[in-house]
Image (cartoon, rainbow, N blue to C red; front, side):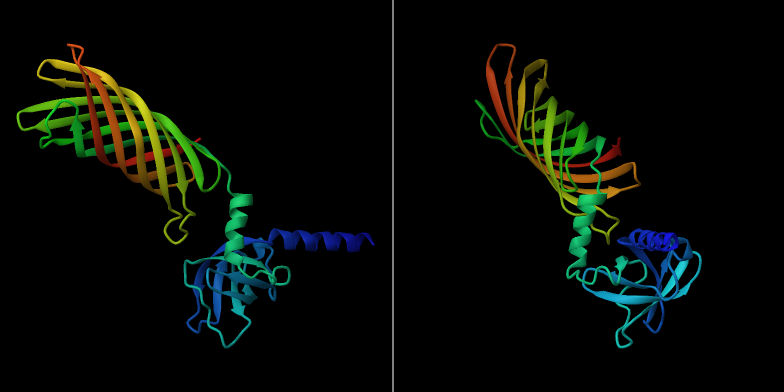
Length: 293
């Protein structure tokens, strides 16, 4: 009786250890009837074992044909069907008997990863961006052609809530040069920034990169200098809309490219006490490095 219990326990452990895995196709035969994956006897795979392999559009059952210590050659059950996978493709693998009820395995795989594998992380970000003025209007001044551009540095703390949602907050320093027909000005801004971000599901076929959308708000100080005159005041970011593309470098670091459109309001006062309001629309193109904590 004890021997039977031990045997059943070992079988259950073997089955559960291979219940749901992701594998990379290492090679496909010229006849398209067999393929190779990493993992063999060291992963408790035995000759004759049957597993179900799925990708986005297809699901098939294959039998372990040749098993070495580190690799397995699989033969598909249906001789009339060619192997639909390609070398380097990632597939989902599970026990052929336990999961035949699965009709949409890739959706279930993504849900499984979101609910059971994905771990929310916190991270620090440091980025640089170039800015370009698209439109500008200033109270008490006639409209004129303005050439406005500069750069900014930004440091933020990011907190993930799920694989799709995150929030970030931090500080930004901006320097812009404003050229008008008869003069040149320099504007400095220092703001506190808060953003809400939505990231789409990772693109497995493109280095697990993620596209994202962001909505940001900010408040801070503004200073404009020109020919011995300095204006001080406040600036409000209302709002910034951003599109992002994140590329994981490794488990600790990501690089992110982003582009944004920003609406800013500058309420400044000159040395004579006169108020001046400037409304800006800027385009921004930047890159940042993110370190997971």
